Length: 355
Image (cartoon, rainbow, N blue to C red; front, top):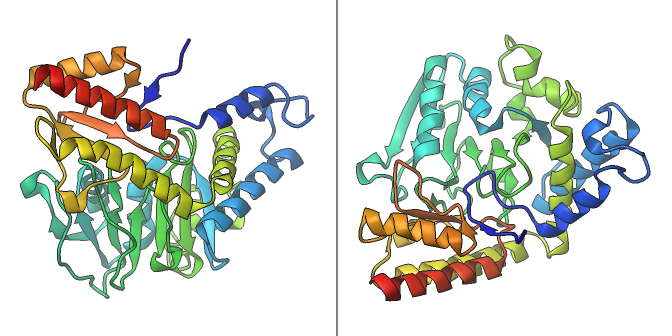
């Protein structure tokens, strides 16, 4: 069976080279006589897997020793409530809402204390980014989502103003260079750029973690996970193993600057299709995501036909989110450039036939 180009927003496509290595090691990981799926998380073999992943991730991103690197479960959704439970206390936090996931993070945090919204792009259906806002130095933290998968808007880089920044980077972590020291805490579900679903990476300043609540159960206490080396309980062992292979591949490609260059090329191939007629981009040009290209066709009937015909052509997962509609092409790290070229060619042919 031929593989398709998988443009799904997540879980997303994985590098073929990684899948092939997983396949070759599935029954016997490095002479242990067992799969990682059946390996004790307390064994020396798995200890080497998780420690190697942490070391490689620190090298790839540039994470200093003053930051904890945690491998947790529960996805970004758990972080939506774990963060306010740990850090909100009797104070307050700011939430910048640029799309669906920022909104969910804010709504989840509300029962745990006071949360303010210094900026919300709902009035234009989240097709833009804030031009001007300030960070409150008295806020426990300021939360934002670096890339919004649903609406296809992305911050161009790290914050340029000071603040206690907490960022959901689930959909663009390791897609470009990152200055970790600008942030108090970063979290990311693995299932878009890092690996399979089931793993959540948290990168946090240890002095920030030191101020978290002392009334949380151990599982919700970041400090306990850090102390236990992410082995407080049985982690997502297989997802950690696969993510380790993905990180090594990103290193082999030349690191994050090289990955960023490829991702920009891929996005440009598709965005060039939107700057003429027939296809209309959802996000404003200055807010466009390199990870999720969202656009509309002239009618719902054509949109449905586009999805059906593209799937038949081996281009899968292109239907837009129900809250936005239209088309969404997710161009995460593992999407090959050939996939974006194939989509661009299909878009050209479809426009010629129906435009």
